[in-house]
Length: 116
Length: 115
Image: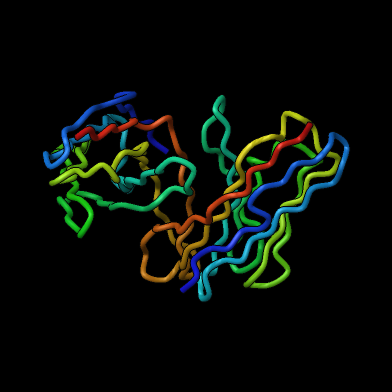
């Protein structure tokens, strides 16, 4: 799987948008970009994923550059509860016999601190 | 839905003892993953199962570690004998392989301390 690079930490004011960058310059055409987060003492939580197009769900938006070498996770209105470690992961998706396989490799992530 | 259930939540044991961690995946999910998290090494995948069959165990550190999935609703991770360096938080996660998404649902983890 392609390697990702994220800043080790970021700060954001409550109520403002948090924009978390991720560099994945060696990404291949069939690799997806996934974002997970881990709030202190909890298991990681899925946020969003995408291949080429920008994606949005109830938690966040994912903006992928046209060359797919980088992406940005956007939390539109950050709250104190969004303080967590955010992981950007790229993974190969492949199917065999009607079943999808692959695994996620977590890096060090970005520690996002939302302050009042 | 109760989510992924892990037990125990905390385990303290002495070096040399056998430790068994348990996981109940979300009903209907057919893939199960065991991870280990430490400050030094971060979150590492140990093994994953698909339809109760181990698909990739390349992350299992050594022969002291073993994992089983006797049926779709239960898995164990066993360490025998345990060592202080095994101290970590162990997470179990599950997913459904239908639909093409790779959204994994993680349990709350088991914090293992080996003295």
